[in-house]
Amino acid sequence: MALVAELVDADPACCDRTGLAELVSTSQKLRSWLDAFDARIALHAARLSEEGSCEPAASLLTGGGRRSARDAEGAARRATVCAQLPEAHDALAAGRMSAGHVDAVARLAGELDDAARAELHDLQAAVVQSAAVQSAAVMPVETFEREMSKLGRVLSRDDGVSRLERLKRQRCVRRWVDRVTGMCHTHLQVDPETDARIATALDAAVASARAAAQDEDVDFDHLKTDALVGLITGARTTGHRVPDLTLLSDARTMRDGPHERTVCETGDGQPLPVETVRRLGCDATITPVTLDDDAVPLTMGRTRRLATPEQRRALRAMYRACGFPGCGVRFEDCRIHHVTWWEHLGATNMENLLPLCERHHHHVHEGGWTLTLKPDRTITLRRPDGTLHHEGSTTDEPRPPPASAA
Image (cartoon, rainbow, N blue to C red):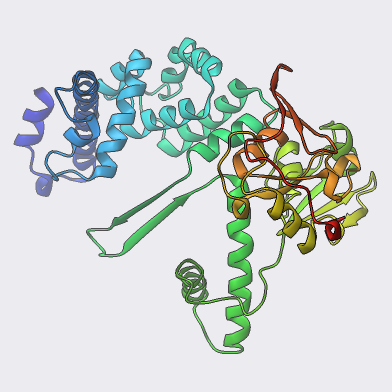
């Protein structure tokens, strides 16, 4: 109430720079208190929603449209962190942390597994303490976000696969209109693997557009924006096939797994888990480049690696859907998987090929599942812990391939 009274009695037009800074500090403290109060509202609304006596917290917080859905959803996520980290809620209510600081903790918590999240809870005092400096001034949100990112790397302690999967689960698209400028914003949040694909396609589109413009004086930002819009809407093509996405790795890593000098990344240097690169190797739009110990390319290209059109037609005649038992994803939406992986000297022969959907292809490459295929095309599937999941044919009984497919 003292903060409210101070702001009500204040006249910014009568203040010098020092007075304005004091008002900003006061309003920020009040705003943090309000954000903490919203968190309490959201938590109780969530409980009532579970009982069926209230709409979801984010819907309630929109206030009948007087608050954006994006802002309300952020407040609801913030409430979850405040419930898990009471000290963060207290710091927010007291003005020692801002909503941005708590949101940074929320993003960190979202990237962690249950064990790491429990450890984060044990470290809540350290997390909150890192939000303030000795002078009691608040650490800038951007700096705090970097600190949380560092803490996340310490807590996660995985080989990159779990982190990549967590990032994939956070992929989203948000659209809004800036009420001041009138400009429309589309925010795309993706994982490094997806970003590499987008960047490759966009670079090709931009290169094509620049070539078409020749020596014209064009605004590069406008050209790049138009190229992206053209790709999304289908209004523009690159004029040629989009270049393959290049993945860089060393032979030792592909053969034996990560080591102290592992190279396993996208063409622009974004690190990827080894199993992800192996999985992507089954994609026709990927060009793997394998290096020897002296960083000299050993293999480039995929001309003998992919199933031929004749082999795909033969497999299509045998399988209506994914070869994983019980999966109904149609054949056209599946990848052709090497049962004995290409990196393990598996041949591109019919007896080594099986259609798998994206999800089950991931299971086999990165999820730890083991799959074997017999000459009669019955399969044995074992879970990551080694227990038997399935032995026999798929639910979609495979039919013998045409003789010409051999």
